[in-house]
Amino acid sequence: MKIEDWFQKLRTKAQSIEERWKEASEQERLQLADQLFYLRQVSDTVVDLWLQFEEKLSNAIRHIKQMEGQLPQAMQQEKAESTLPTEEEALVQHKEADNETVNEAESEPKQGKLPQELHAYEPLFRRGEGFYHLRMFQDAKKCFAQLVQESPDWESGRLYYAYSLLFCGELETAFREFRLLAKSASSPNVVAISYNAIGCILAEEKQWLEAAQAFKTSLEAKPEQQEARYNLALCYLMDGDAKEALDEIEGYLQKHEHDWEAQLLWLRAAQLLIQMDEKAEPAQPSSLTLPNRKLDSETLQEMAHLYEAGGNYHRAQICYHFLTERLPNEGWAWHGLAWNTWLIAGSKRALTLMKKAISLAPGEDDFVFSYGWMQLFDGNIPGAIAAFRHMLEKDSANRLGQSGMISVFEKVGETREAKRLAKQFLDDPDPYIRSLGYFHLGRLAMIEENWRLAEQYFQRTLPHVDQFREIPIYLQLCASKLGGQAVQGEPVQR
Image (cartoon, rainbow, N blue to C red; front, side, top):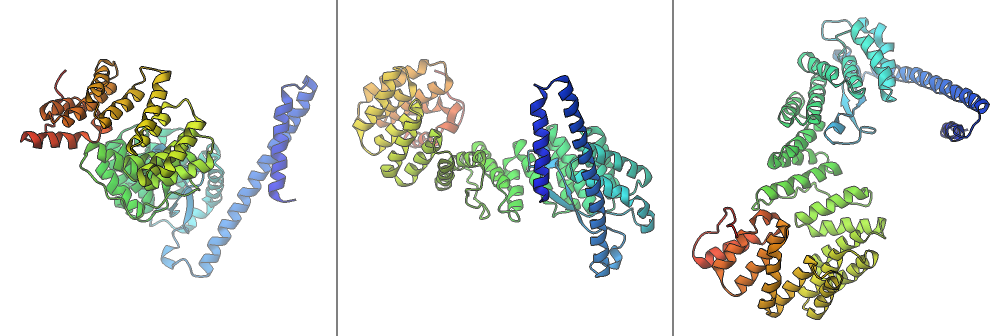
């Protein structure tokens, strides 16, 4: 029997006991409890045997490397490199810790100590390490607590102890251990990893400035510590420093171009920079690779939104294409694909895709509006009117439908009717709807070449300028027509 099949039988047995427990009689529960106790004994035996195997395997690999001369004599006071799985990235919303690792040298006691002094504690170290890799952090903590008491200068043992404390939720004690290592460790690896962990603990408490400083210090100790570089970029982003976030994450992407979380971080930072400075045009790094089908739906959806916001409609279209394959019954996915297809190639294919979205979600007014908008820009005025009136037949006060009709009236030269509808928006309790009304009135004033009035209307949309990207252009045009500079101040009161 394969070991996978054996474990599957054990899992099935445990699940069967759980399912039978609720309806079991008192006598049956005693029998089920005996079975659970037996399974617990099996589990403990497996763990012990695995730890013994892991210890033997690690020793064998190290001894063989020494015999083959792979470890220089000068490094006999240090262990071979091993993998220390970490979860500090999760504290700043980095990668899932189950499969992520950072390489760190398992340092021996500080220089001046003889390697022989470590031999007595190596079995204890290996046992704690085994518990750690099995994510049995309470047991690992006990082993490493004993180790650091007996051999306080064993840096990798203290590092494991600090992480075990961290994953057991003992943040204050873990923080003290990491800080001790950061100040006293002789290994640059241990110093860098410790400062990175300190930064993550501080970031969890939203102390962005202090966390960023810790990540910087980690990079100073070991510039190739890429986890710290990612975390520093994320820290900058969370603190609103978009430019610094872009600089750091671009450096990270040069070595990790297939890291999708890093690519998302770049897109978020670029979006934030554009929101902060409308003239900013962050150059997309060459390492930003195309989306692929392997990404999960949530990642694809966020990437699509960020690409759309940045004007990269081709990549947004790719994301939505993959989403429609995976979620063929979700109207929003088809709507996104249709909208970006229209922006890229026009309505010939996009209209069919939009009809698919509407058929899947007929109650979504946004989809019907998008269909009418495409018709309007294609010059199909009757088709656009039909779509917008369909919305208004269900709700005569539907602002989206009314906005579509204002655009239709503007297109056909019915400015008086367009103004009548737009002025109704000015009494709406929603500030955004009022801004939308001023936006429409500003465009209508430009058509009539009433530049002063148009400028005043556009100024009143400034609180929502991030949603009306044309406003800066329109204000500049008004200013040039009036012979002055575009006004960038607060909007005038109505």
